[in-house]
Length: 69
Length: 228
Image (tube, rainbow over all chains, first blue to last red):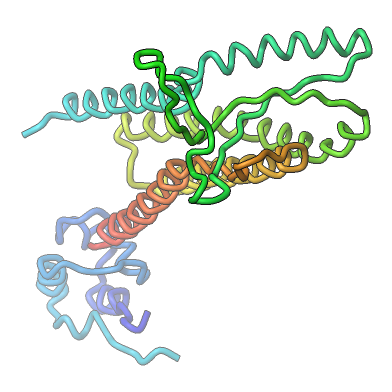
């Protein structure tokens, strides 16, 4: 998929674990893991907003578009 | 708002009604032509008795007839007992009894009979498999286990089974026609092929269509589940 999720990078920058972030964002660790590993098909604005708020970043820091090879 | 119990009740009721409709569909021919079937048992018994005594068997055939020419369309007649007049008549189908005279004839029609028996045997298996698959799917629906790939596969198989029944019916109709044609030729009429079973094809294609819709639903559900 040409949309790359850089959630792990932002999590590392903020030194926050998956469990902690999932608790703060209000989604299950399993769902956050799906998002982190790029298996998600879509992301809700509300989820994106909560992640950006907790990681103090922009949506573009988490999501990146790359042309398909 | 309908409760889960109501929805389950509807599924159970419709499943039972579908089962009754299936028995009706399979058994309607027996009900309509019960005398034919009763006679077939009698003839089968007689044929085995004749076989034991070394006599060649008889076989009854249902002939579907087409008029050979439109000028001579009403080539037969029936008596109207009310007026004692002859009514010109055209026969559409008639039961006849054919007496085999030589073993050579029996050998010649062996290929037709074998094809008919094999097709009939497979048809019976498929006719049993159809309700088994149907009730497996309905059982899953009843348990609210609806949108998954397993049910989609089952529906696909059910559709294929229904189409297979149609194909076998077609094979039997064509074989039976050639079987009769190899033995019988009559005046004023030509034998016509009696095709049946279009309802199986319709049901099969409808089931495959529903399976495709279920496939799309499963994809949407998976997408929904992967929306974080």
